[in-house]
Length: 164
Image (cartoon, rainbow, N blue to C red; front, side):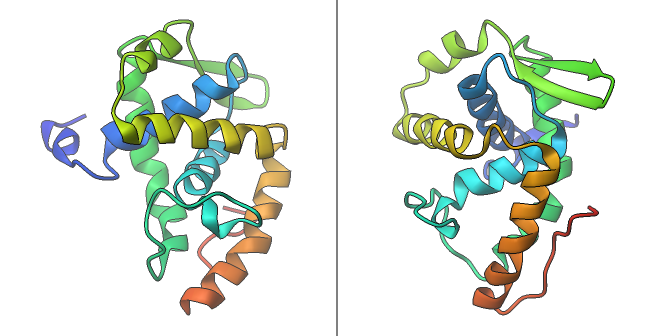
């Protein structure tokens, strides 16, 4: 990862990787694939897009559903960053590549006491409790069903389908 990639302060590899680390730590020892983590990350920051969801961590900007497409690559960079620090592990399983927190992840997050991180961890726990047991197909169906509504509300075309 280039130094320039690490310099992006918002929605860059460091921040998105931290959000993924919070999700994986909340789900420990469960592992998730990149598609699931991409959807979970969107749900985490835009939880107010979901029925009965808590307030979102990021503003409801028009076209935000497009983040599902642009987030995946940066998320992968973030996962690799935290993996290089021993906080995320890659698991090669029969059905694909999955990511999980390590036994060091919670201790690392425990020392971060910024208000954003505290809310982030609580929201990550909410996402895992609400959606963590769904398989990749069910998550794709949920996102595909909701994305039409999100796109209509923000007057954008759908950006995520069951086949992506």
